[in-house]
Length: 308
Image 1: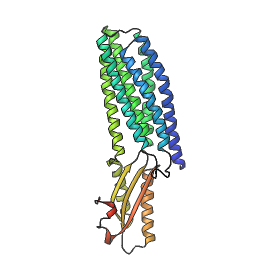
Image 2: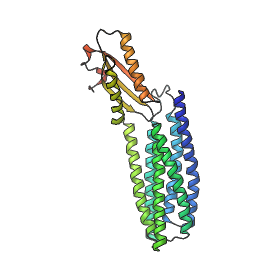
Image 3: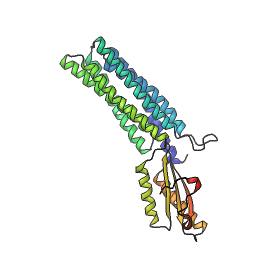
Image 4: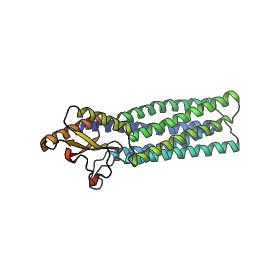
């Protein structure tokens, strides 16, 4: 790894290890709160935390694996492990939602019985604030470092915050109205929001595994190339971009005059590659194919259908 890549990886691993430690502490806190109050909403929150702990542990391993360099069996590296991790985390979130549905349904049938609401609300409130700070940090660092693993974990942590908010609302309504049925009702609402978050993560993970286009990133690359065209004698086409988890892969054809020397054409191609790589730092891999103007309109057999 380069220094910038090592710094990026170190920052990501640090916040993920913090997330793992927080997950262990909050799980114990929520189990305690659930036992004290006998609240179905708090039991649901604790169940979600068990799933979250497993998912975070797998995400830490996926982050390590995704940063392994290419080897004899994986010539393009191990980046896509991050998409597998995000998909698994989405599946775990969805599973937690189903567990919450089950617990809320059981409470509705048996009849909710709650006690020590104040203690439960205090513990849940502490957990919510810790997760809120952690979730925002994960999303910010994930966006900064273009990390699928961190963004997925951040969304998972924030889904835990939504559950805690629902729990606090439920406990407050039960306390002030003396109507215990608010507890399972709010658990159902929290589960629905968590399920939506989980399905969204699964969809995004599948999109990444299938190399779905990223219009925003491609637009930035085109803007850069269009600017370079005004300063250097070349044109381009067949631009393609994909994101494999933390590495951006870019391919394009660079068209130069027939009479231009190989050396000068190579200089232009290298300059374009360096500019694009800097734009996509710290993880950018650029492949260019040089063409003379006389062959510009010829489709290469290995390229398939032309893309401008």
